[in-house]
Image (cartoon, rainbow, N blue to C red; front, side, top):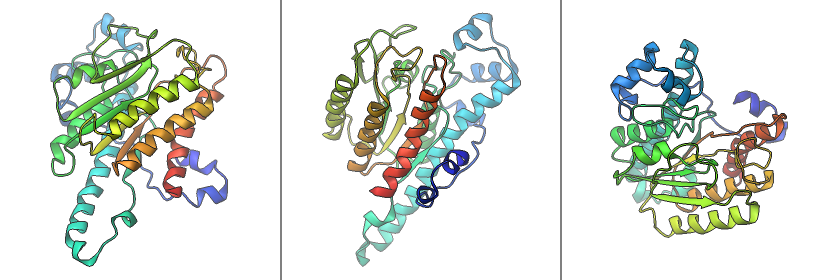
Length: 307
């Protein structure tokens, strides 16, 4: 991430005041808040069947274990860092309320992980390049460790594929609402039931996509997802017209507007947001996919400096 920041013009870099950290490896204790202990242990030692490996999409290796643990651990760290600051902020506000403290001057509680978004993992198996669900693990960890500051979580999943793993992992869990907006022609396994599933037709462009998203985010703003106090944003860019697997026709400007709409929602709710990556699959030229991914994070930085 620091390399991405260094690529910006100097005047823009000076506006970015962020703390950059290396993604830690997730602990087994945190993983088993969400995933079956037997599955975690078998993955650690490489004891998977051929079918399990095919479902995930890549072979087992020690480096792969480190990658999966880092991808999950980074999202856990990003989410818990918000909660730690929020806890301190709440205590400060409570102690200073008689002095007329202006809460708006304390700053927004946003974080981002330049990985993660592995939303196809289930309790006891992986799927679609996803071994563990980093967002689900992070959500369960902050519900466990920060019950005083997090009571209701919203997962906004805007990858082109349904967040099927998270849908199943949080079925019947009142503390988490799953919101997935995805292509109706792009299920590669059995469709699951999120709390809110929004299907888009194959080939739809910016106008349909953004109009639909605007409608449903306004519904969230009006309370359809409950009294949300923490948002996870799975910012997949495989909705891009240049994506090899996406089947939608969203432009770079459309993705920029999508991101802004999610950031506006978090801002309007005065709600912390934790951003992760998602899908993005180049045809031959990597540049459009890299640009779309990078813009998610650049745009978040810019939003914080301007609001």
